[in-house]
Length: 199
Image 1 (tube, rainbow, N blue to C red):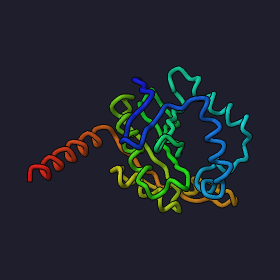
Image 2 (image 1 turned 90 degrees about the vertical axis):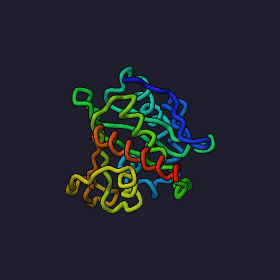
Image 3 (image 1 turned 120 degrees about the horizontal axis):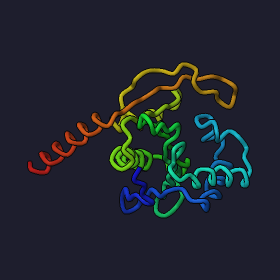
């Protein structure tokens, strides 16, 4: 896989490969916004110490091939805004599950969609994945908009696939995208943009 340390989305938005020094930002974000992140992100509901967060980050950064998990930090105007990445990576079949989150104070800026779109492009073009999956709680209405905007297809429902903080199970909506679909949609987007510019 062709790994890139930094991906520029726009002048204000950068994706940077996770570093050990990011542990403090991640810890601060989760510990101060547990009520916002916890219902939708199982790991955010657990009260991990800074040391445990550092161990988690180190376990990811020390991978040589990123064959289990890959994370990028979302930086908006040089400030930590969240994470985007891949988990459940299956290098043999070139597929993975894509995930993302941003802090509450970075909502409604289009950051999540823009960062996810650029990371999807990176995953297909540079990392040579053939299939990406996004799983979102059926109750997380804001996050459900992201795979739809990215052009992912709703493939089904993983019934009671997520156990929330209150010990209630909720369904997960499963969205998928394969490289051939991505290439077609990208080609259509480029052509439609050119036509609009020519008018």
